[in-house]
Image (cartoon, rainbow, N blue to C red):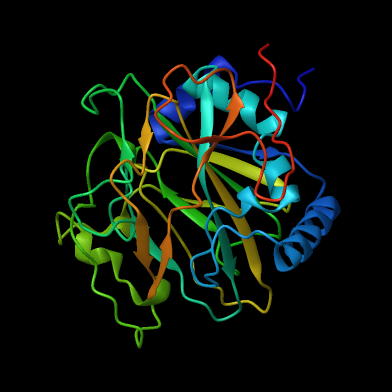
Amino acid sequence: MTSLTDGLTAEQVQFFKDNGYVGPFDLYEPGEAQKIWSKAMIEMALSKNKPHNSTIINYDRHLDCDTLSEHISRPEIVNKLRSLLGDDIICWKSNIFQKQPGDAGTGWHQVEKYIVGETTTAATPSLNFAYSRDDDTVLQDVSVWTAFSPAKRENGCLRFIRGSQKRWFYDETKRLTKSPERKTDFFGYDYSELQIDPSWDPEKDDVVDMEMEPGQFVLFVEKCVHGSLPNISDQTRLGYASRYVIPQTKVYEHVDKLVEFGDEISLDYHGCVLVSGEDRYGYNRIYTENLNGYEFRRVANA
């Protein structure tokens, strides 16, 4: 019998390599997940030391919200990450994804160095990887998307194109055109502008709709083409993505602010969290506690 805190099986690792994602896996009971999110919302509202004051750019609240600080290093998550990244892992970023009834879906997109929408100039990546990205045997970044509400087709579940991480379909170095009046895509951005082959129809590819129950999570590599459906239901969809890299990665090396979704935040607050193993490089600021003094947990080596 396997434990929820076990790593991935050899078959699951191979599935990830073949498809670009694996899951979903259980983390919280459905009722527990919704209570945890309610607690997190209260903590974020009352936080005395927020990383930034933007209400639009919902990044990095694991750095001031104790509940999310605890979430990012849950053994159920970290031990599965170890199966893909090795023992040394840092959390470098997190995002809140709240999709209200009537909200548009997120168009298909594909990223690696987080250039699009993340940096002040298109030439500056958010992530500077330690190894050549031509070497597909070296995995350096994995995202974990956790559902804190039901995530179904009707309310905008996450979607993947199976196996799409093996080649480029989108050019993340291009700049997006923001049209706030456009309601058919994410914050007025049309990710199809980045498509390398305009004749390619992603909807006719091998699409997987990742329906999830509250408290489940899925792991994926950002180069796997992904997006989400529109919310045509009367129920809000709540998701939280925590993003992980190996310590050899230089995070925001030449980036001091983010300009995105019509807002701007300084990165003076930013730091990474060591959730497993050791940081033998010292490239990034490492926080041992969050901005309100909560001590981050590092999962012990197996």
